[in-house]
Length: 100
Figure 1: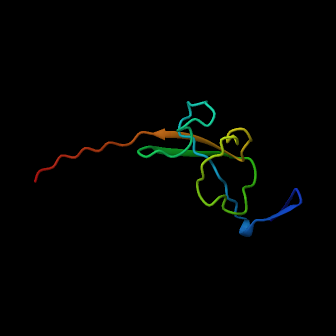
Figure 2: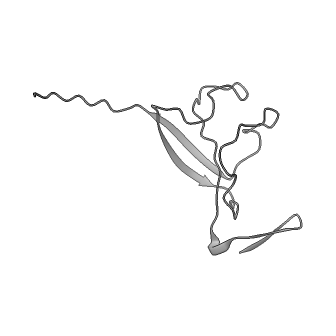
Figure 3: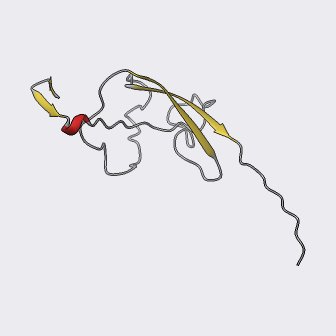
């Protein structure tokens, strides 16, 4: 599929679309770019549910890896093409008794 966007042509090889999503660790934190608001924290289990796709992704894998966010560039302001619900689930505790 070829899509013309602002004098730019995007070619979707084999119709593959890639999407980037910032995992929000703390849904109760409304402070702008607060430490710990985004990211994956060890000893936490994240359950992401894709609720809606609002548009096409990119025809390439976005970014080479997680970079530090630009402080002046807000993550939440522009509407995204994916809508997620994120649940931070508790760890499962296992206890085993044994004899040697």
